[in-house]
Length: 214
Image (cartoon, rainbow, N blue to C red; front, side):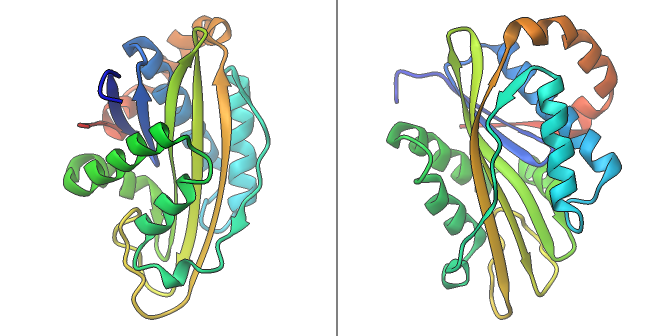
């Protein structure tokens, strides 16, 4: 992987890791996924209305030019046996990423551990009391289109969450569900609405997006 250019960013409740992706395509992915989050959150609560929130999120992504296979969450029965959320996230990522993709994913998790600013943005968007809901994935350029392998992580615990990615379970119950999917952004479709997306986001671009130094 040393010959690849790697970049990272947090866009709201989603951590995105880019491998050999040009800047314009990175911005397209960040802005479109952020707009889908904000649109869904205007209508539904991720904590108490997760199915409705995700349906709206997916619908908005598709309207913006993303082609995605529908997914379903699955329970992780042994999450409580792990020390913290990041351990579960990393073990889950092994199941849907290639070895090289996983290495970048792991480096992104480690970078978030050390970098307070992007982690603060992720926490602000991902945490709602005793519930955390966030996404993290790997983006590559596939024949001129952004291809995103995205993991979805949702958990609820018996005390307030203070760090979405690195929360330590301690005592009490843990219910952890996860899902993943591969999505492709049609660059021709998105190019026609790029300016409108940027205009609609406005100041949210500065408010919700931070780089992750890899």
